[in-house]
Length: 147
Image (cartoon, rainbow, N blue to C red):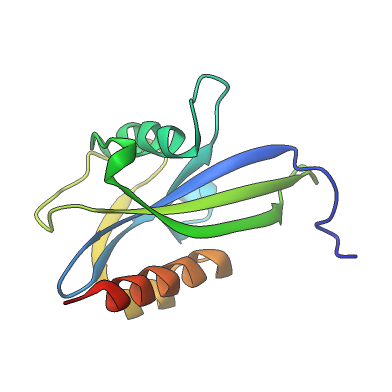
């Protein structure tokens, strides 16, 4: 048994906004009070959210100003339990969305910067291991479906 066994107290979503070819990922830097770490769009699933894709579309709109529909999302089939700061076990569901490379996000108070970077650079800069693994999944999925 791992320390992540047991009930899931909270569901969360994360989204990788990308453009291709070549594959580039839009990553976001948290402000100093939140560690100045690089992350994707993410957030908690709220009671009014219909499902995980709808929750992510809401989070993307809140954090970037971009309006997506659930049909725009690619399910990365990546569900990761993690221990939250409060000690509870939460679970993350990862998705991706292809957006125009020219997209410039309207940053919310959750981020102080955003940057388009290549997949390898994103893997090197993202703070959390599960974020890095999700970009690898995205990179591999895109490669499998390329003409």
